[in-house]
Image (tube, rainbow over all chains, first blue to last red):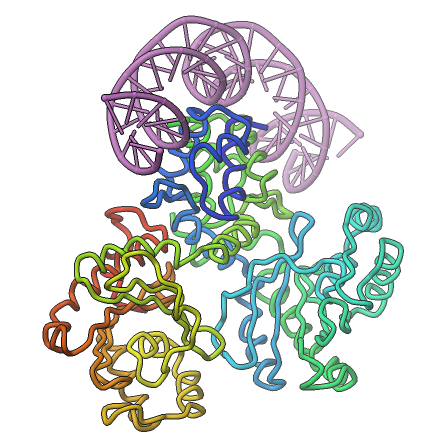
Length: 261
Length: 261
DNA sequence: ATGGGCGTTGCACATCCTGCAACACCTGGA
DNA sequence: TCCAGGTGTTGCAGGATGTGCAACGCCCAT
């Protein structure tokens, strides 16, 4: 691993927490000021870092552009989106789409009950991995050894009394989810919020994404939400079919129309 | 500028155009495969790059999380404040900064004419949402359905003879404001007070805040206040630029932040 | 005026990155 | 079954490149 690049990239999450001046960056990085300066300059030249008027550094616009492109290149999202909207229109509830990447589960799309257009508000934020219904689905699909490894290194914060308390309970839950092919989160993250979720599978049957419908207790009871399960599963299956289906059955997508040399 | 970091960062926009394998990355970078491999590994360790099942690389979803965290920690007020002060010093009038939150419009900063230092006196109090210039700007940016919903459930108190009388008039006013990119309140809240306001926009072009200059009739006439409009708009644009992390003269997105998608 | 804090620069040293070449692995074809 | 061609991966020696130091300039506050 390249030391210089490693140091430079370590600056990004550091700045994500808020602006910082050169001295702070150097200190938190454990390098000399002049070194930090050169790294920041390079990041700046690429637009990943912006220098505000008080000379402090923060993340720059190009990073946002890249992030945008990163998510738009996830073709699951593109395929799933109209289905999410349709589901939202039928149920009126919030619909999420999430993927698993590098030990994290991230929301990559969201349709809010009130706002039919995509809201980038919380998209991109890692979910509460030990309790979220979508996380259960995505982790349940991992091979057993990996599942155990992940479960072992997670923290199990007790958001509510119904949160998954420890690795043993989590693995048991994952096994059940794996078996039944769907998942729920009944007040495990926030007392009054329930979710039902179903997996999106690729051509090889592996879970590539998970979608969920969420609603607060005050709108529908858990039982009423669970009644939506068949609809949610059907929608997820539709997405799976379209994703793995006729167009590109192989990892080799063939010629991509937006592939401009 | 650091060569190694420079090369590593050059990979990101390259991958933004779509997944690529090691050879392609090395070739487009103009370096040896082993070099590209090490750079990619480092990017991978930081989650900026993801390796899909066919071993090709693409941008990682962590980029999203990073960008997301950054915008959440971005403080409009902190960035705007020096600009507000500068505007206050040039005009001598009261300067406000407001945001839209949970159906309300709140002042989050204020610089009084007489007191050059920040006055938190009324900061945090909801504004007269149907007449305040800043409120018009913030609401005018909402998607149409939401705008209608908000307008429908508001009360329209007749503070003065010039107050917005009802939802129809309000929506009409919002449409005009949306079109022209600035707003006024000419005696709509208090008979003798006039305001001119301009929007602060984020990287995606959406209005994240609005600033206004207010002055009583006895100090300057409405016409004289309106003459300050270009200055107010310019200041708001400066804040927008700084807030969205856009560095100087960028060849890509046009220099006119006023035209919207 | 004067001191302290911060960002910036030039430079000599040696660290760390580079490219090479060999290796491991897979896939397809003879 | 073996081989050929492609890809990703590794260890290594040389030297380009990043590093920390110290000195400088600047601005602000005292």
